[in-house]
Image 1 (spheres, chains in turn green, cyan):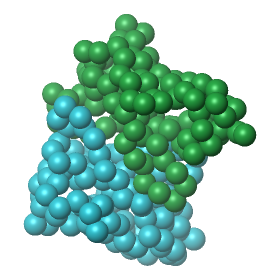
Image 2 (cartoon, one colour):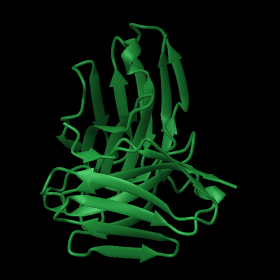
Image 3 (spheres, rainbow over the protein chains, first blue to last red):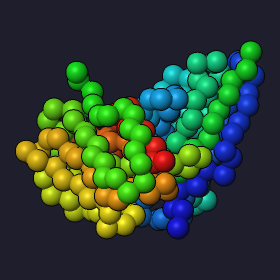
Length: 113
Length: 116
């Protein structure tokens, strides 16, 4: 039962272009969503988050969009840089339950020169 | 250090042996999580501690897996009679509080377990 889904295992984008990573969820109790970035041989690091009361959150080159009716969120990176090449995990939590983050399977982003 | 520390970073063991993986969370973090990532898979939740108690053990895949946390700090994940399918990177994470408005977890670098 995959409650958080990232249907694209990989994505290749040219440097300077926009990267769009997508994530879908099925649990309507999720009310907070996060994106983590993972380099090889390192643990995931927090990137950006969004509460379900918002539909957009921006932090520098990174913007997360949330469409609650579609149970869909996306991470936009613009402009993409080679250092952005990593695996990106979408995660969700129901804050009222004080429980764990549920992660998607990840999307490997490669930013080419 | 200031981050989450895990040991060993790499462990190779023979099928049937027991292994222990250790996690030192960020000082003062009350919530501690174990996840694992198998080859080509996402992050799979195993167990969550709030203080020394484990209110959610739902992700432990079998009774060969157990975990404890002492003093509200260090946690040990034990896998008994290891099987080849246990091979994965085991990630520990800590958080200042469980869930909460951010749910932000701070991860260690993981312990890579290979069962031959």
